[in-house]
Image (cartoon, rainbow over all chains, first blue to last red; front, side, top):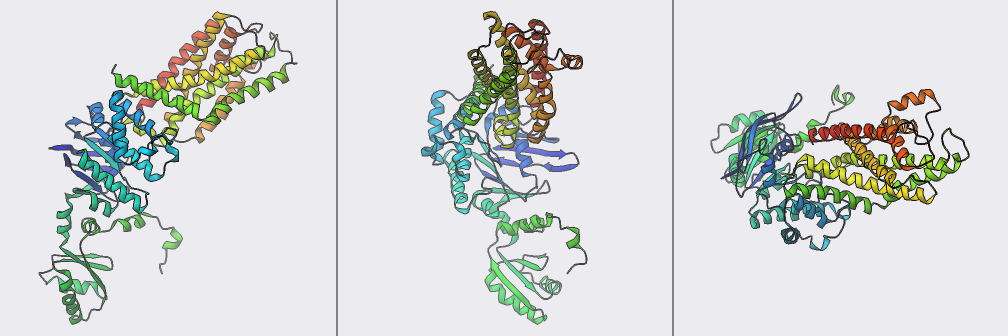
Length: 327
Length: 253
């Protein structure tokens, strides 16, 4: 059963199209991820699905409720953890949860037991009477996740759940997310620009760039689309080598990324000597070569033609005085 | 109305109260600042003779009460901006409650805080020897205080819906509110100066101060009958609250 279903969802801000005709669906009980660089339209999509923004065009349904027409019913069925913390720092952890539960119309007794449940889930029982302003970044995130779960939502939206957290805390948050997906059966829709996060958490991933969905599939299939193993190499004559390698039918795909060449192959470690032999016969010098299992990075590279980190630097404007005349 | 809506109003109110009580600095500054005005201005100008003013302290006290309520309530309206910047507003806006309940709860909370401050100033004034007119006057004073609080929260909401940060708020405070306050007869009678008297007709704060003064104290001449002031303030209150809640409900995060 599809718990989220969007149909040509679009959002324009003046001339800018932040989300461009996206259609996708999320199944009940799965962890679905939107993977894309900053500014790809992930947060705008979440804001539309959580009724904070009106779509310019198209529509979406959550648990069969329309996000524009049945806003209140949608709101009852979802929990949201925003990118920026949305806690009242002047209140204690427990108060934040209690006020949340009241706004969702949960009765007194239920509130009490539920607060204990969710605090237990994120291991914050002993910190419930501490003011949130004294919480660490990771604790705030955990409290927000707990709060998002308070009212038994069908879907929990997590917008960049581990942004700005250290490696250890990130791993802990991942465990909490997996745990609640398993124990509470909550469907999770998350956005991220971390490959490892999507890789570790998501059952299915949608790769989004410039407001458009490029591909949606399971992690497994996405990786397979790049090849079983990925060989990356750099050499003295890329064009020449590509021309030669295109004749070899054991190479599943060849892609050129600036000064690098990636090849999708089976049994990559056995293919390295073959490639070196071929290039030597063409008088092409291999500068570096490596083989590894494909990651979501490769998938992203495959579908967008660039990796996420390059995008970040390409977006930064180079001042004119450094741009002219080159090196 | 559903229970969740009542709960939402209650939560919004309770949150304001808790924040107010826990913020020691706010508690102190909102009481101490008007107290300084009362003691220093009151002490300094006591020797000056204004037409129609028997006792300057009795003249000043209603002005200071108005000022305290105004500032406190505007702050509440403005603090929506704070929630916007710190993201808490999003949490409230995705909850299955109407924007109307959010505004009601917030306004009630702000008004309660402002009223508490106003009453504290009032009590201090009484202790300093301000002569009050009687029980009916005191009740009318409370009505004025409530109306002033709601009007100012509404005004704060209007500003908060139209602005992105706090710099604009500072600007409005120093370029609009302070001059209006000085020209409202809060600190001295505007009747002696014809230009100021004309300006006063168009000054919303004038009707608040004049009305509060007319209903609260004796021995001080006011320009309008308190009930006329009341009528004007009621109309302003409705307009401001209407505008504030309309703009707030339209705002997207």
